[in-house]
Image (tube, rainbow, N blue to C red; front, side, top):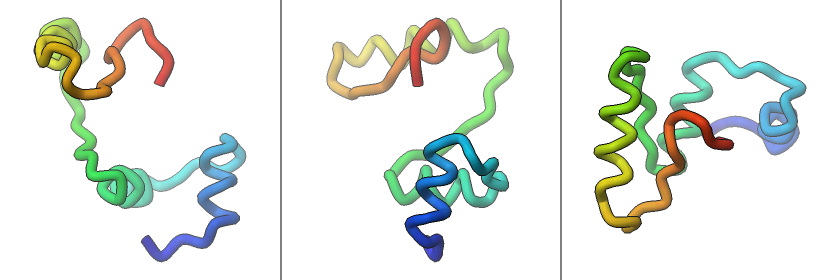
Length: 66
């Protein structure tokens, strides 16, 4: 990713706010694809994500700890 471990630790610890580009880099390194969805769609998307029968480890989009 081109980021040193100290920077990553600061981001993880909440001591540094990453730029959006950095968030994308972190997500893609973890084989994730961040998406912005309208707030009103969150319940529908959460239902779809949870409908996979527990085959993935996706957290709920609302009401849960990330």
